[in-house]
Length: 276
Image 1 (tube, rainbow, N blue to C red):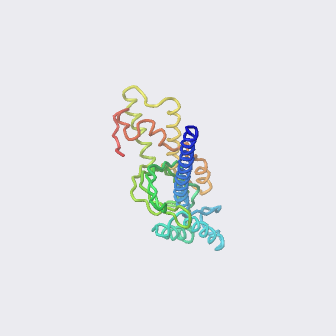
Image 2 (image 1 turned 60 degrees about the horizontal axis):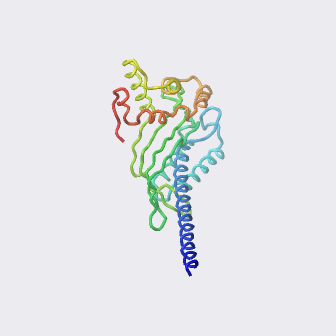
Image 3 (image 1 turned 90 degrees about the horizontal axis):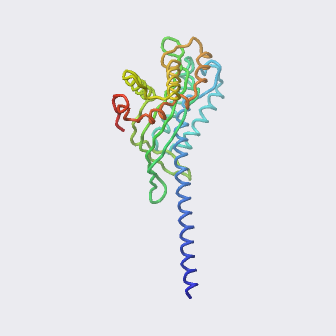
């Protein structure tokens, strides 16, 4: 009798553990699906105006080729943006205008771009499992070759860290972005400037906030800024070669910036703090 009782208790505990494990796996799987869908939404947004050509313009593309790029982009928008997301139609229209008009006579060429890092926290599913909210820290970048008003060619490759609140919804079994409800943007150039200022202040006191490896990283940032913020190129091919040489992971300042105190660099060298 006692053996049967113990066996019954063990069976109940085992069943509960299996059920709990299954529920955890399902929740974890759903969280991953939500995160992947959000990343997909950000990656497709960086494809606005994407095409391939030898001169950085769409004037050498056929109508069939242009329509193909438009169709591919629209399919991505419908996959990752909900039907009631205002950006779904707006981004489609913007993309088509880039391809059919903006990039027809002016170099406006997307080389690369997308998500470098994404942390999703506090994912909360609705009771019926059809919507979810979460807090996101996103690092993304763009890399393009563009013609300025003076006819010179520039490489534009900004990196940005965004802290945001996000709402996702499930449509036809697929998680999609419904809205970004609140966002604080922090630009890579500002982060680099903070690091440079902190190092300058430290050097004035006879020290450095960086080890040897980090000092090499700062040189990489400097070269990246020289290529993008302080340079103009005579031809599209020259600028394209420079753009393709930029590794976004190498020039992403936020890992080093966070190592050095994030929003509190002033504790190292008296720089101004930034509150999150």
